[in-house]
Length: 328
Image (cartoon, rainbow, N blue to C red; front, side, top):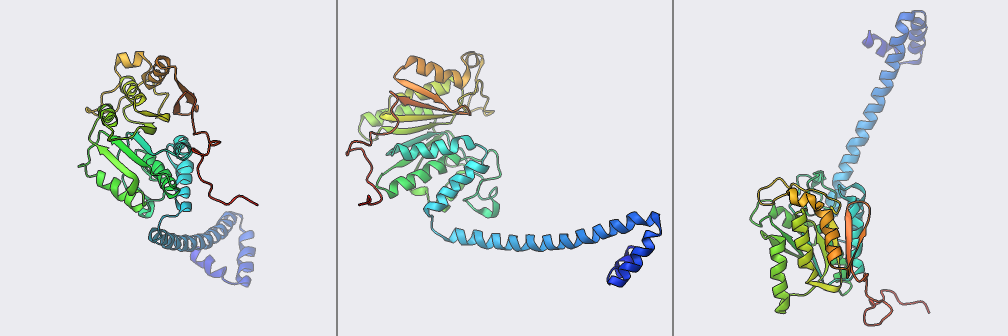
């Protein structure tokens, strides 16, 4: 029946004949209308399929073209925008990137960076897009390194040190290096893998006292989110932060934390009774009134000393050089 009707509908005359016959047979009315819709849907489906194939081909060409280009300012800004719009932690994207630019730091430290699944979870193995994996690591790392690239291009010699308990001999660490290399950001990265963040901070204090390391201008705290660990990290950071240093704390409202691995103990009954990471921040500020905390309402807290955020740009010594000649 369908084959016969399809042939009949090939010409206008046959359409009129078929329609007049079908309209005189009420039981065939649904079939006629349904056939028309199915034929129309098939035509549109064919057009959509052709368009999809064309778009896919152009997308592959576009991705190949972008991978051949050197990193540009717009490419890194687009990467930041994508993570803010489509990433799994959008609340931290703009604060991380903005504070790193505003402070004009010479030294940035992040506690906790994890591993990336690049290139398997990236569409067309494109490092500039957002990964499909919810547990994707190295997100804060690439954002801070993008800021480092902008700062270095304007005369600020800055580095990012990433401290993580995960080891560098893990197979996934090679993916970290590959992702940052393909993004053109590896030059500013100094990983410190396989070490506990609190132990590293205490050792770093000794190196700073010996003059072999600089004070920290910006710190991002995102490792073990338990009360004891966060409190210890903040106490250790307090002694090695620069005068205008800022600490950004992720998952600031966590009341309990269970990482699920033997190497990182979770919050016990004592940690929960103290309020987890949220309580650790409150206790730290209470014990050190020279530090103030700002809450963004999502999951990020900002710790600043004496309310200082940026250098006084009214003084010639601290003001950055202008990029454009002022109007005459």
